[in-house]
Length: 460
Image (cartoon, rainbow, N blue to C red; front, side, top):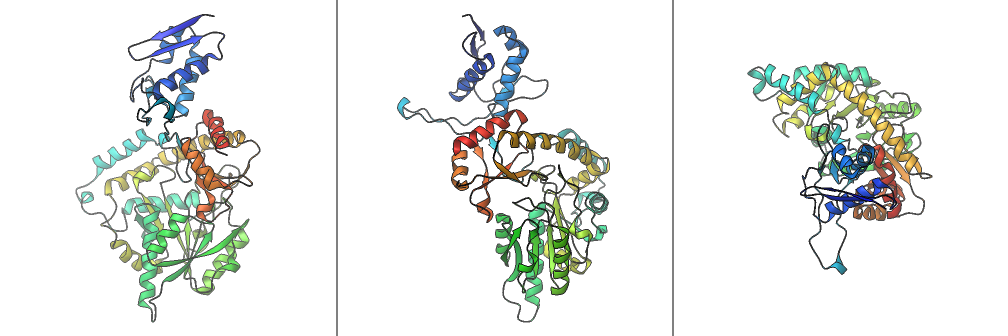
């Protein structure tokens, strides 16, 4: 049995032929060195070519080892640069008999999070630079409350093309993400009720059950009364809508968290209900840009622009950090919504709005969506394959899947996964089945799908 060693001031790796797979030996030793602090955060490792030569192994052995460690969160690998040690929390030194494996968040797989590593930095910087160079002096003043006129015109054309919405730029109000759009709608509904005779009580708004817990809580804090309405395989059950509801919040293109699509019959029934009751429909179009195994589903707003409030953002397609969202609303509500919007801030940052308009206009947004959709489809397929016989639903679109584990307590599984560095969500937190996990596949590299599945299995 021969052994080869690679040494540097900070690195000692030994591989022995006949003692197991060479790639696994490299992985195990580097993982242990990072875990116990012998390799510090930010430390640059030799290139795969250099380390392979030192160890007298094929370059593929080292490249695959680096790739696996990067997938697990131990290394950061960038093009044309040697890998560096990632920021991995380490436990304080303790007695050997009490030593505890440090817990690092290797994968944040909560629903609604895109792969932040795929953010198109170069393209976005180009648009932002163009915005700075091209901005007039007037553009540097407080921006229009409803948002940049040019961006609203661009968005109307874009959303009409890809989502089938019907609107003019005057119908669009820019918001700091979808959350601020929901706040604006809630404030307008509360103000409208307060102005009516005897209108002091909370405004009922029907919400899907199960449905997004954070949005439900947000609406309740703004003075609305969320009323749960069941969801089945065709979407929200229209016949169960409360008679006194002033509004209904739905996710028709990809229901959260189940993933079902609102059927054509239910769409028609929902619009008829709103027409009869004089109510409004709030359409949360949160991740409809991504679809894999089904035909596109047009926005509900395009069927009845006078009844539907259409909410969207770039949080799922680009990044939540941009805080760029929009609300397309009926003309009859425009003044009330602008008054409500005025009470929140002095408008969104102007340069970012100009940059987004440029980003969409020159096709960078379309290219990014096509590229990321291909990657997400492969990652989704890899995860589903790695999960084996698990029952997976909601996989035809969006960024997350629902994984059903009969007999399991998903909340306990989530806690156990967190101890293994894996952050998931449980459907029960949103009113769903207690044995269902919600997993975003967007940030799981294909090579890591098996590793993630093993972590979940071990948590069971």
